[in-house]
Image (cartoon, rainbow, N blue to C red; front, top):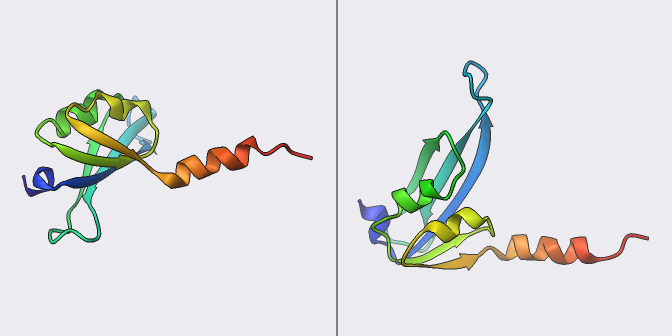
Length: 100
């Protein structure tokens, strides 16, 4: 799969409510190349869980940089360097400012 041959990938996950299903929430995972890649790829993966086993299995052949938020599930992915999203880090600074 071309996606896993890239040097840098982006990943994110989000909850999705499924109305006609016993389980109330499932998850969509997004894996994509960067905007400067010669192969622009966006892959959506549906899973019943948000556990780290999902990206670990999907990215099992990937070796490179994984740009993602600080979600602990991405630590399950082996042989990658996690590159955290600065938008999420910035949010923590604003939350640390005392409210008057």
